[in-house]
Amino acid sequence: MEKQRYRKGAHTTLDLKYHCVWKTKYGYPVLRGEVSLGAKRIVHEIAKEKGLTIISGNVRANHIHILISAPS
Image (cartoon, rainbow, N blue to C red; front, side, top):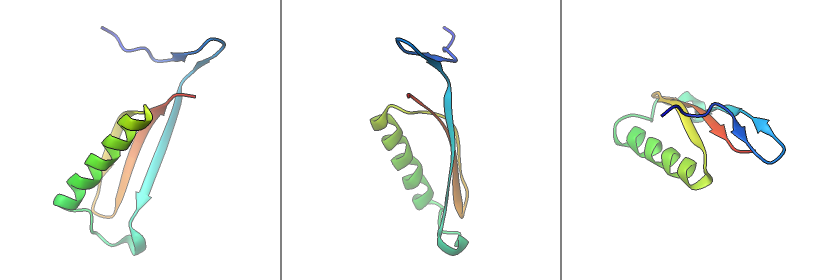
């Protein structure tokens, strides 16, 4: 089953995507091990709660990248 690329409303057709980056204060490399897994879990929980679709994501030692698709 193929996933729809565009979201359709009563009078709209759209494809909203947001690229978000969170960086640690002063660039300290604290997002490792359990902290990294916890941050990933929290991001997934918030996305599910808000009705967002995570397209891709990446947790590095000092920042988090995430590409999400959102409703209007």
